Image (cartoon, rainbow, N blue to C red; front, side, top):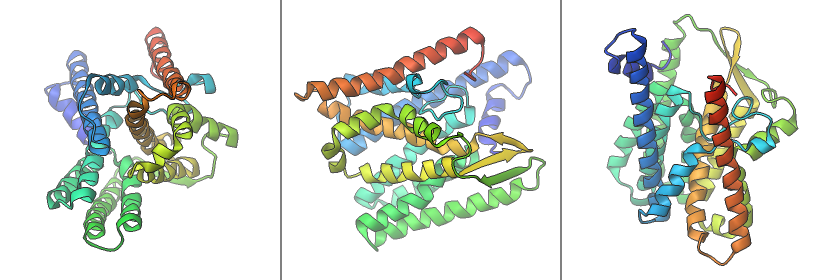
Length: 319
């Protein structure tokens, strides 16, 4: 059974047939629609955070990071045995990312304006995410209430966020109990720094996955700290990495990558956040620092091109 939404839509668009060409067409429809809304909502999230006007340069940079993966110069792999801000083959992840971005937009709107409609939207979006792939909520549910408490204290904002969190936790628990009745044997294993091997490999996972943000933020730390949402993304990144580095899971005895999907989503959001900062400093007179950040971004984009080239060449995404 699993998380059914992606597979139900796949069958719906293929007319509930097993014909390969129709199923391929259905997959293209889903991936294309997901990518369109991912880009559209990414621009909306940047406008929400940085109050940017929609412009050609904003669209170009958002489009560019759709190709960004881990910098292969730091890792002998492209997306295998590492964590990438983008994956091009995972249907449930691709479908869930636009909703994760939308959830962040509504979260920031609520924290800014206390709009009660955002509460209902967050619950609805959360339910959709649970039905596709709940990974992102493993960061949102614990971190957003903590961030709200730290920043705004006890009050209506915290109460609203807690209402959403409790409802989503209950739904996840119910879903987990239902899934236990099916044949797939899921096991969560606590194994600190075990999934990626040595500690140095875990460091490379971070460096290669978000090389551009690391370079940008270390060279523009004051501007980063000044952005009011920066601490929220840092906290979510910490939670994502904690889950990825401390646990792994197995399905029917086979170790899987499932405990890393939330980190991939957060990596993408961190990339997106840094694009907003990069646009702000692009026309500053800090030519060396801007060039250094752009070089780091370019390395991740070139890695993406290389990865797609090899994937086409060997007819496999597992490179």
